[in-house]
Length: 244
Image 1: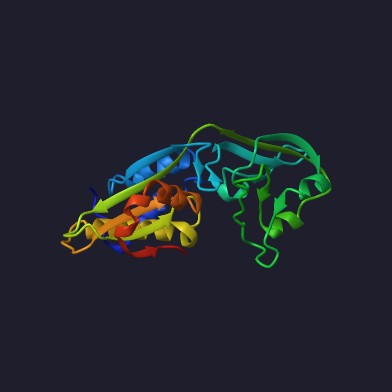
Image 2: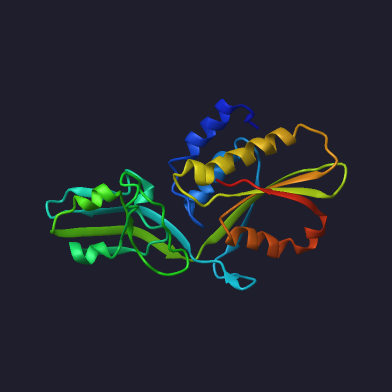
């Protein structure tokens, strides 16, 4: 395992993970674990789409290849390749030509932060959309726009990862974070990188408690883990969620 115990190494791991388009499911999550597992060997569990988790259901797997909005001259004015935040997460496939008025219904901005691209998702309701800065929106002319979201939704898996450091007792401290957000350092990757660093650090120590580290997609991930680990919940003595 490659050491991840200094701020330089943690920052390097964050740089490696930052470009990946992650969501609740899909290749981005698996690619993220491929990189993490060079540092700490998380054991992965893959749970099929459609599986009932209490009163939730694991959604279809979502993957995206490309997306853009182009004006009538073919210029891409919003481009997924420039930022994976530009696409509403879990957008269904779209290929259409729309007027500005029709397109506006599917555009998301932060008016009070005119240079920021918001992160938006539609995990459990079929929808599509683009996120852009308010300045970009203000500059859109009354034109027709070519819209493409080259994505797929189909049977697949939800993936979560666990790494356990045995202690002198079976009682556990559970430390978790969510792995589903794309290029967001504070809201997502900071927690992921911290969990990886803590897992590496604790693997070198002798402790009374056992330590379990969990990385999973937000909400549906911890619920899935809980539904499959009810038998061990009595051992959990303390917990920490590393977020934001």
